[in-house]
Length: 365
Image (cartoon, rainbow, N blue to C red; front, side, top):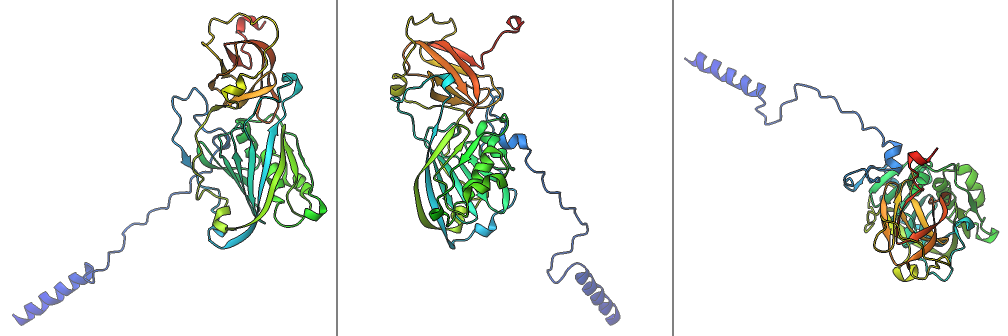
């Protein structure tokens, strides 16, 4: 009887050990493979996200795509020396689209830049840009490309893809650019990353542009395409390193999703000069008032009347602009960097126009 009891005890103890009687979790009996990392974002989704065309039934949800590399080096609250720069920016419209009217008040277009020795953030401030107001570009010295936040969210850009983002499609070649070298007395401190910004913006090689920044400091003026920027402020600041990190973390707030926008108020629209003579006959498909434009081009478009920019719209989109008096105007359009998108032609307002001007197949021969 005692032997039977001892045998039962030994058997029970062994069973308890085998079943993990020490309360430790049992080891897994199979090894699972770790899934491969997701592929990088394709270029066409980086600079032309789905939903930017009117053939999409609805826009995709706003989302933030992780940067190619996390910027952990700038994730702390350690203070760093930087410069805060403001550039006032203006678009020069080619004379072939009209003389324009300097009396018409245009909305402000400014570029606000915070730059340290190896990080840069640039914000598109004001309603005068052909991109959503408040869009932000982040650049780091040790990595080519940039990170952009706009109305569609945030996403990384490969080298030169900022040009595609600004154009709203594929640019025709490399836009022209010019950088005024800082005076010798100003060539110190952070600021040469502005040359990197211009290089990314135009798709030009960074080494080619960098020679115009000297030993450092900020350029007094620069030009990208037909946009001319003049420095109006340059002050030294101390900010936490996290305020300059160049990845997807801590996105800016308040950027609205926009596919078109007027650049003038109704009051400014009413000051546009019409062509002299008759007002012309209104087309059958014309709206009750104002101008409706359909962008049939492959990039974003800036619409002009008499040589004055009045608004912009993305490729494949339709926009309506109000405020101008009925009559005949010189209607044309630019791509964002300044290349001609539609030559000037006399157009009756109220009216509806497809730009570039659509010609029926039967009339093309």
